Image (cartoon, rainbow, N blue to C red; front, side, top):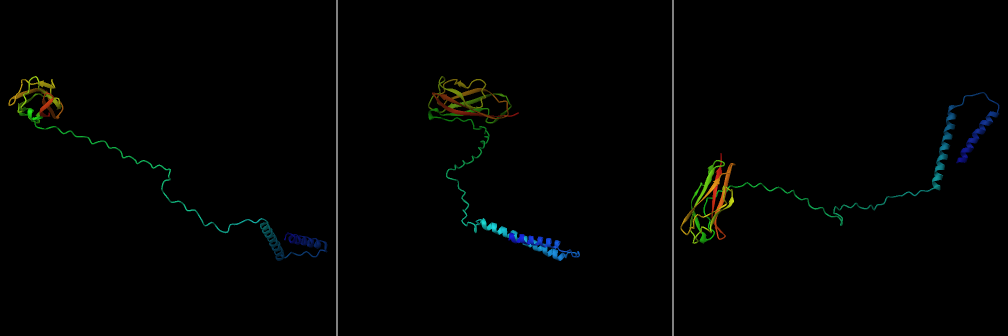
Length: 228
């Protein structure tokens, strides 16, 4: 194809040279249609030559082209389970709430004797001040109990004492006092303590008891209300 293209070019050049050697004819205006036809012929021929060259190059260097895509596409794993080596996270502990604030309940039990053993039975016949007695802050008063021995054991003067067990310490001097005398069955004893009311308003209680030979008995209570 390239050779044919060269022959056409050489033929046109020869025609032009031959024309220049012949006697000159009267000058005429070239026909535009002829020029256009010649140009189109040359352009078509050039395009055919270029296409032929590309085809020949493709034949000399063949390239493998896949005709179809693989159909066996591996599936995407959808399992959400942890791998065997994974360690599960420990559960999140719930926050520890503080314990509720306890509201103290004032002790209002009536002052009665509580027997420990039948041989140490007793009873409270009188007491003062009265249960839940109201007094001013810091008031000086006496805590007084009259206790009767209703058991079979005699409360020896040097063996038994009256002592503080728990609650508010109203006492101003001693946490225990001796009995003024030995108290046998059927007899009573007056126990008096010098006490002082707290300076803050509120309800206060105290507990005292008799004690002899390691045995505590005749538990008594005293409750007052301090108020301005």
